[in-house]
Length: 344
Ligand code: ADP
Ligand code: MN
Ligand code: MN
Ligand code: MN
View (cartoon, rainbow, N blue to C red):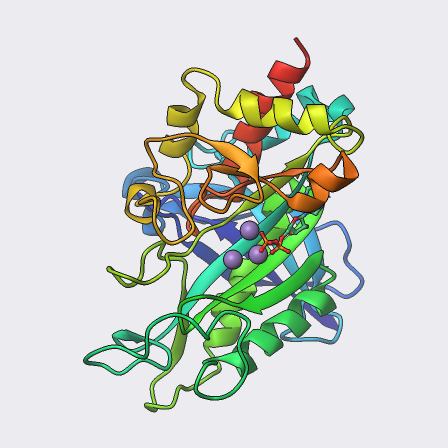
C-alpha cells in the first residue's frame, strides 16, 4: 500500500504569491517526508535554464480531503545547492530566526483571516450588475437573504479540524459573501504554517462547489474586492508575549513599540499589497499613514480588547495587515519590533 502526500508550497509570484501543490506517493506509514523538487521556472522562482528548486517538508498533518492515511506536507522552498539554503522567496526562514532569538519571551499569535467568495465576476450572492442591499445585516447574519456560501465555510471548518489545525472560530463578515476564520493562538512559525495550510484548504474545498448562477465558487484574499462603501478584507493579527499575558503595562508597551519612529512605515510596507486601498480611515480602519492605539477602538491601528483592560493583562490586536499578507512576514516583524523593545 502507498500513501498520497500532497506537498504544498508558496511560490515567487509578485506582488502576491500563490500557493501550489503536487502529489508524491510515499510508502505506507511514512512519517519523515523526503525533500523533493519542482520546476521553479513555472512558479517565478528560477530561470528556465537553471530551473530546479527544492521542497523541504516543515509541517505535516492528516489530509482531510483524501482521508484514509493520506497527508498534507507543507514545505519551504530552498536552493538546489545541497545546503538547503532558503530561496529568496522563502519568508519562513526569517520568521524562524526571529522566533528563535526571542523564544524566551514566548510570543504567540492568533490571526483572523478575512476572505471573499466569488462566482464569476461578482462576489457570491451579488448580482452581476448593481449591488445587494447596503451593509448592515450581513455580519454574523442568518437566513438566505444575508448569508452566501455557508456550505463551503462549514466544509472548510470541518477540514481544518480534521487536519488538526488550531482553528478557533469562523464568522460571516460585514460585506455579503465575505467570511472570516481564526487560527491560533500558537507560536511562530506554526501560525504561518497553519495559516497557509488553511488558505490552501479553502481554495481547494471551494473548487468543489457551484454557486446559484451555475458557476464555480472561488475564494480570494483581495483586500478591497469591491470599491466604495463596502468593507475590505483584513488579517487582524493578535499577539502576546508572556509579559503581556501577565501585565497590562506590557500590552501598552507593545502598542507603543509598534508606534515608535519608523516602525509604522516599516510594518505598513510589509502588510500586504494594496494596504492603502483598505486602510482609508473608514470601515473600521485607521488610515495607512496614521498610527494610533486604544482600548476597544476599531478605528485604531492597534486595538487593546476591553477584556484585556478589565483583566489587566492579555494581548493586543494589530488591525492593519491585509487579507493578502504573508503570515510569516507579519509574525516576524511583530516579534522583532515588540520583543526587541521589550528586551532593552
Ligand atoms: P475580533 O473579531 O473581536 O477582533 P476574534 O475572536 O475574531 O476577535 O479574534 C480574536 C483572536 O485573538 C483569536 O484568533 C485568538 O486566537 C486571539 N487571541 C486570544 N488570546 C490571545 C493571546 N493571549 N495572544 C495572542 N492571540 C490571542
Ligand atoms: Mn474577528
Ligand atoms: Mn473580521
Ligand atoms: Mn479583529
